[in-house]
Length: 458
Image (cartoon, rainbow, N blue to C red; front, side):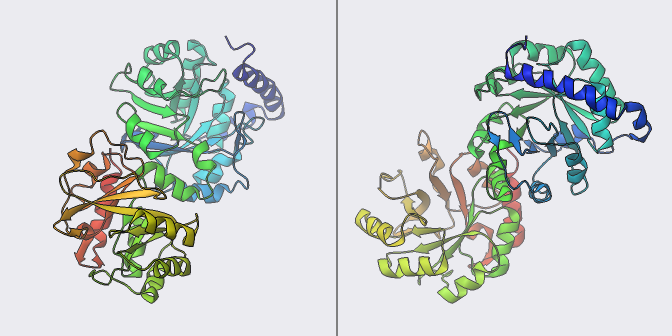
């Protein structure tokens, strides 16, 4: 079955490694030290939907070295607010992992920690539990039914959960018959390492509702997670997070998306937005707005939290916009007036490519033309009369049907009560303002946290 495949070679090498490891450190020398786990893997995955198993992975056969430097403490802290469980690669030869990673991570988090390896021998499970593993991966691609049952029994006897991995129809049928509680569908073909996300749909739709379905491999975007969550209860993600410079931001983007709290006037509000999960903070430089702030005030707000800041301007002089954006180090400029394509092109020349240009559009009874060169992201907001934005009302979201929303943010009347419904549109992000305020310009921290908590469930 596995001859002449990458997986076959890995398993053969694993058998050789185990011969040496068991000779150096026989099970009898540490078996009495192995206690039972007190972190329930199955309960953790059922506590929230979707659940996320976030992975610590330094390298892989398909990608080579993924993360260097590999700061495991930093990774564990980044995962702590978001993960339902944390997976640690312990294979040394192909993934540059080790058993010691299990305890290092477990000591810093409250979630169950998973032994992620090519487990083919009870010895590995005992050793993993000794190092702190609360669950183990068992791959049906490398195990017979009898081998699986034997290994699962050992894991359960130690209070450990089992993540049963399948990648084919045959393996799925076996997993169901073996009464696997958690079935991980690997979207990667383990024989040639290709990815096919459709495998989650094809196999997942056949799994009984009393099992937990985990979609594994090839998941990079929040939009993918939202789509796959129609079938999957949980996701295992490693490589796409490990390849990002800031793992904390990457985890947040993956799980809740990229959202903005606009109209910030106080540093403490920026910090509340960041703590809740916002990626962007909006600073309004339009003097007629009740949320207008000066450059000096903006600096104070920006010092309060490490958000990506977006400056909002309305028909302002190009040089004024460019100079302020460069002075403050803004991540994006949001144009909220009647700025022309020529204006946008000239602004692009002034600020270069490192600052994104966003264009806001008022929506009444139709979606305006969004085909504007040099615009990185569009923002759709409700329009009442001549006023776009700041109305506290939402536009008719049914107008968005059939439109590609991958670079469109939704604004207008967003609050804790409609945040989940808005997020289900699967746009590039949401823009909160008056719906998370107590008075104009003063954010209500409870409303912010409630709105972002609503984004976590889908």
